[in-house]
Amino acid sequence: MPLAASTPAPAAQPFEIRPFPAGTGAEIIGLDLTQPLNGDDFARVHRAHLDYHVVVFRETRITPQQQIDFSRRFGTLQIHVLKQFLLAGHPEILIVSNVAENGQNIGLSDAGKFWHSDLSYKELPSLGSMLYAQTLPSEGGDTLFADMHKAYAALPAELRKAIDGQKASHLYTARYAEPAINGYQRPTLTPEQLAQVKPVEHPIVRTHPETGRKALFVSEGFTTHIVGLPEDESRQILAELYRYSVLPENIHRHQWQEGDMVFWDNRSVIHLATGCPAHLHRTLHRTTIQGDAPF
Image 1 (cartoon, one colour):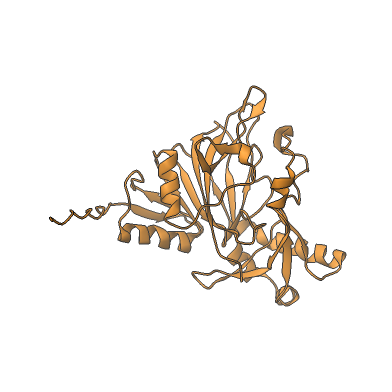
Image 2 (tube, rainbow, N blue to C red):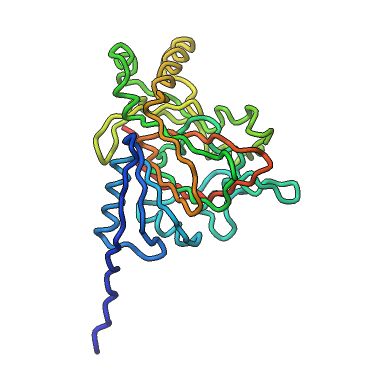
């Protein structure tokens, strides 16, 4: 029998990686994500993600399935608990949108209203998230990213000592019922959904599994308390950690452009959605890649 022809390896692509001036974030220019990446090109993208924590693929034109396939190159995809906001036929994609049809929101309208790391409330939090612009507002809608490695490095010695070896509890519903952006109210969770988001405990200082760098791993969005400490002491320490987490010099502001897909490292940064005027439409598609248990 004749041997089956082997599939040729994908051709190399000429593309640029341009770091942003502040040191957090880089843009990737000229990469065609409709085509499979060969090993060397994928390694360059992976390295940029580790080095800069936030990478922006410019002028992207891909289908939902292509976004899913590319995301899967980095690991298993996680399905969001709010299944009513998953893209039809593609449950790996969460719709982030302030658009309403027939009186119902088509997506999660107020995603990111508090600083957070995606899915820190899971036993296996997210490695990273890819957010792909579909419809952008003419004003507003920026996303802020804060470098948690730099936050940890900035901590005074006394505060580092106070959190050494400590764990914090993370809960998806920690601030779920608080007033939302533009008056939007999140849907009530079913018992089945609540069972998927029980409290978890993670180290306050985590070690990045690929780079070995230390980073803070708490956020105002999902962290409820420090395990084993009195409530007032826990609250005071967390307030200080939150303050160091968002030092202005460590924040990168992403101003969205048409065709942007942003891929950030949830082990290295926290992020915040700044919101946009209610009458302007904003819709994005998010895939979320599962990571490891923090240590």
